[in-house]
Amino acid sequence: FFQPVEGVVSEGFNLATNHPYIDIAAPKNSVVSAVLDGTVISAGWSDETGFTIQIQHSNDLISIYKHNSKLLKKTGDKVKAGSAIALVGDSGSLSTGSHLHFELWHKGGAIDPARYIKF
Image 1 (cartoon, rainbow, N blue to C red):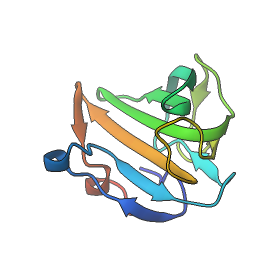
Image 2: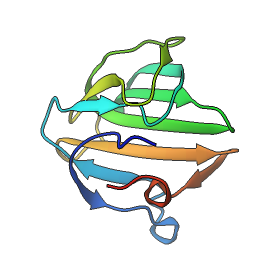
Image 3: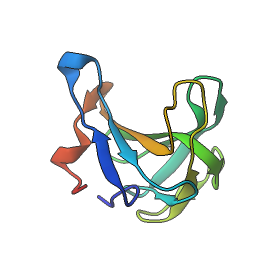
Image 4: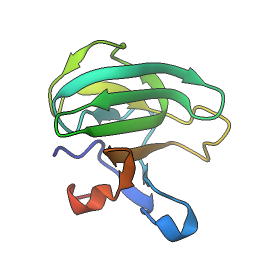
């Protein structure tokens, strides 16, 4: 696994508090990288999460990157681990400052990215 962005974890993964993802504070327009090789299955805008990109990886893994300022890939693109896919932003009504909201899913369930990635 590649680290998705250089930054500071502002809130960690916690199922008990309904926070099944990691928030990483980083300067606006920092490069967001794919954590593994895969295919972009969704890339677009939502009012709540802003510019969001989702990547399907092997072994039933999906990574999700939200609140970006710009997407660098589109649906259907193949990506390599470590390649630039987006730029950090503060987009969407749920964002509270420049950061990357990062999710990792396995077979439909949220998993703690910190078990696989050093932040």
